[in-house]
Length: 148
Image (cartoon, rainbow, N blue to C red; front, side):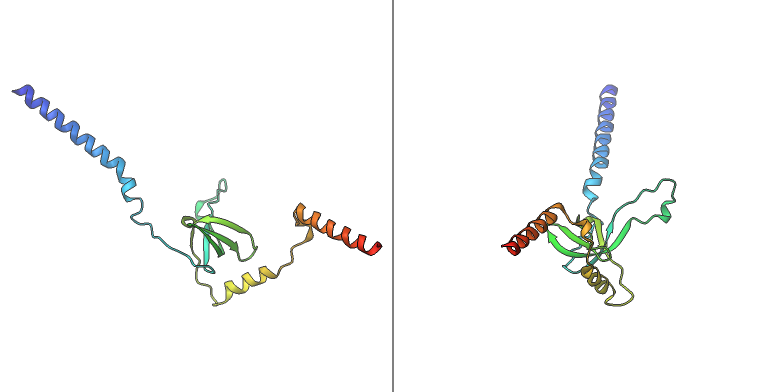
């Protein structure tokens, strides 16, 4: 009888241990979305982009991992196409990498900065090769017409 009691106790402990470890392993999957908010941004909203930066030997309190603000210019599935309001650089990012930008001091501040960047004429040096070839073809056609 003692061996049966001992066997049942051992089996109960193993079952309890297996249930506990199974719960511990499944807990992250069950609670992964518990605090996550499904935030959707409209076209024209301003957001901050999370881009972690690692600078060797720099205190992490002095290094920010959020940059921006960026303007949402297009929605691609669950991702957003963003345009930086100061440099006009574009990027496509998942919605988990963005958060709402802080409210500007003046209501039209972000819009004014974005409009100024849209008016900047970038230097010709940065043109892609295809643009150079199209420009060359156009100039060649103009020269040919002038000589006829």
